[in-house]
Amino acid sequence: MSIESMPPQLGVVARRGESPQSFLLALNDALRPLAKAADILATASRLLGQYLGANRVAYFEMRGPDYIIERDFTDGVPSLEGRCPAVSFGQHMLALYRAGQTVVVNDVASHPLLSADERAVQAEASVAAYIGVPLIKNGEFVVGLGVHSQVPRDWTPEEVTLVEDTAERTWAAVERLRAEDALSRSEQHYRTLFDSIDQGLCTIEVLFDDEGRPNDYRFLQTNAAFERHTGLLNATGRRMREMAPDHEAFWYETYGHIALTGEAMRFEHAAEALERHFDVSAFRIGGPLDCKVAVLFSDITERKRHEQALRDADRRKDEFLAILAHELRNPLAPIVNSLHILREGGGSMNADRLHDILERQVSHLVRLVDDLMEVSRITTGKVELRREPVDLAEVMKSAIDTSRPLIDAAGHELSVALPAEPLRLHADAVRLTQVLANLLNNAAKYTPAGGRIWLSARREGPLAVVSVRDNGMGIHADMLDQVFELFAQADQGTHRAQGGLGIGLTLVRSLVHLHGGTVQACSDGPGRGSEFLVRLPLSPEPAGLTPS
Image (cartoon, rainbow, N blue to C red):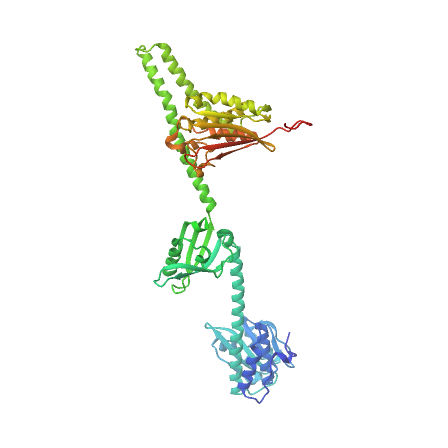
């Protein structure tokens, strides 16, 4: 739309006859509050047109081969808003614009640089005289300001200078607003990107002490994922030592090095004060005097825990294989020796004794292999429980009978507290006996000779709880959750009192879980004994009966 009837409050018009300086002051006052480039162009065009008594004022931008006029001021002539070929208004005039020269035409009809066709185009647009001022940016003609009269006119040097000044001032204001708008959009895009990154991202200012050593940093910006990766809330504007006083010196020294040298770094490191482990990429922003660093990071604490668990499992596996080799070698040595004696004719040993040795050692080998096969079947879910009504006291007695030889051989005192009331389970009695016997055997193995073992059972709501307690070696706190893992016995080191493969507790946990129960290891630490608690669901009481 043209701006013939622009409301007067958009600018105070300097009347003709007043000095050009008065006009430029009025123009500055009118443009100052405007926040849109289009409004600046429209207001400047209107004020200039009214001051000069022109019929049209328009800014025209070069886009490819065409002029683009978004809005123009008109008074008694048609608007030229839209797109038109630049050469149609004069090939020679376009060349002058590109050379940065102002074009002044007092009479289009008689101007020698305009062809007949070009005069016709301008006449059709009601242009009989005009001033055209080009603006050159980076060596290129990008925009011009045209002031048109529908009748021939002798433009004065003052008027030409005023149009040039107006073009320069107005376009400078337009470019400033466009730059600010582009910056705002860029910042919005940056913020959107900043917050859309799933990794933690922050910019920091590294702080140095009086001796130039990095000793803290301040958070300047943080993205949406920052809190999730660090656990630090409302960090922007705050210092790291304020939020985590025990944060390690490594972080200050590393970021200080990056800020001073500009060397980008990628590393993984623990932040003990935050109880986390991070994968970090950090690089400097600005120069060394800015002391600013951008940090892109991920919390890899869980990954590190999994990696450590895999390393621990691999270590236990290697130690287990060493134990297995040792356990297999023990019976093989007497077997090989007995075979050698038999081959030599028996020597001083009679055949029955040799046969006893062979039978005993082969039985030991079979037992080792059976244990391995058993844990494999249970942990892979290939064991079916033969459930039936079971009295827990009877299971406890069977387990005691199974473990009694090992307990007596070590000179241990076994105290048993059977439940005062019947505790009935729907379970596989053989497998439950195996569970309790393994726990009793474990207590016997890891309790010094002449120790004490306690076996008891009680009701806890809908559960039966069996306790196997000893005053033996005890368990480190960090091993309590690991003792049920396969091969965990390897961690007992030189205290493998009775040999074995370290799979008994793995069997215990697997069988208890198959029964819908849980097993828990407790200990106050090395040398303080240990206790294993097995919790199993009780069978529903028959209707009309309650425990006495």
